[in-house]
Image (cartoon, rainbow, N blue to C red; front, side):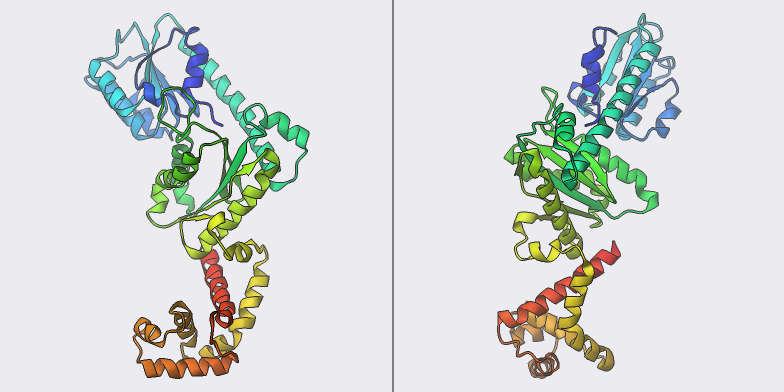
Length: 395
């Protein structure tokens, strides 16, 4: 969705006689804004995706230009254009080598061309793109929520996407603090930079949409290859590595759907899978692999689920509170170990006879013999609901 460096380059290379000197493989990066740069200290104020233009006024200082591009690359900036001919005749070889090795784009523009006009041109393109992105986001939001006028949505999205092609939704929730908003935005930048349509790059060649709904992200793929569907979840986790290393990212993946009309179904299923991801603590859940839990996590009203769990476990919970007996943990282990007393004994470090005594009491309290999987199933579901409620409260 965002404007890419290569798009601006292709549209202005003849007008401003631009030449890619090094880092061509990085030209597919997103550009959020353009800045004039003559003092290296300004780099510390960049937030990522910025493109800078310099005359190289301070290039007489040893390694000045190399330090500038290294600082920009560290902050995930888009690239640097050098206005050569006055302070800098050509870009030093060590800078060229470094940019090629690190895929950081550095371009030349002859001195006789105006930096002011180039910045104005690029900023206008970025503003126009942001306005178009807003239209795209609103159209996708209407499409996935099923509240849309088909003709209007097709008109907007049809400019960039194949309406009769395949669509797939990914819902991504990140547990973050206000202080971590910068880290979050940096991760989103890395996510967007996974994609690219410029020839010769090694990025994901696919049309995509990225929108924010409530407190989570929705990534939408259009006509992507099966290999991408398989590899993308791992790449998303890498993009959000700051959060994934602490298990604070939860992702649900919807099935592939044909035609824009069915995108809403993929989104709803991705959101259901995300709820299960949050509820179980597992980072990535595919809706197609959820089994019975498709039903459980599709229930929007948590009061209904909590009421059911209370009906099933209420008597045992009350007994535990009154007698501090820990029977809830025993029953949970009994289910996990498929009714094996030995398994429960090993799991809870309790003598087998004691386990048997506790199970007999649990049967009396619940009024259920717990003799087969069918009788245990309601209790298993109730435990899942309790766990899901706790996880949801934590995030």
